[in-house]
Length: 277
Image (cartoon, rainbow, N blue to C red; front, top):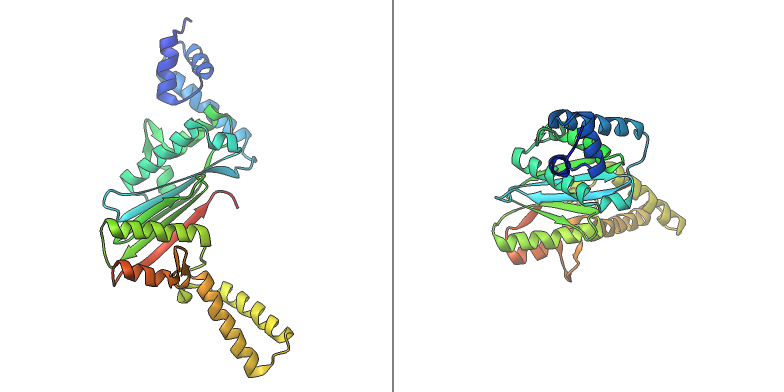
């Protein structure tokens, strides 16, 4: 069976597989493109199965907003090595999945994986890419956020992304403020939006640690409780977004900064996702 360079190039453009893999697939399929694509898919499934126990601790984040900025999307695509995380085929796969998410707005990982992507589903494309790239590829996280205005932010290095939802005003100035807040979230990693939203388990653990410290310092009874509450207040200031000092102007909290942009502007929710543990 004679396979031309043009045939190989056409199959490579259609599938993203390597030149030699495409040539082998076309020879195996006796020049039939559909069968050659199936061959490449099966190869991807085999490699995916063979590498099932491999760790995918590297990867990249992908985030973007809908055209009206009312919904933002964030996903983490993982691989085994940092080298592949910078590979153009890997990055293009992530971008394509994100574009499919924006177009169809799935609300769960399962729905995302079932979306059409070219002539296959997102999950089939991920498995096929394992065969093309030679490493296990997975989607480890998928998040969406809906609000009056949403702002996505990808931190330098493509390993950390943030989504911010705001209400109280709209427009370019609000989106700029949202980006400032997203950068704050990336840098300061707040545990909650405000003190009322701190996970009770986190609050209980922090309270116990502080109380033990206070007792070990020799304080007792009412005084110990008063000092504990004071230190908890400091914990809220340092670890809840709206009470944190704004990184660009420490004289203001994040809540106060937003009010300088528009009197009613505030954050309704945020999500912060990173590659790896």
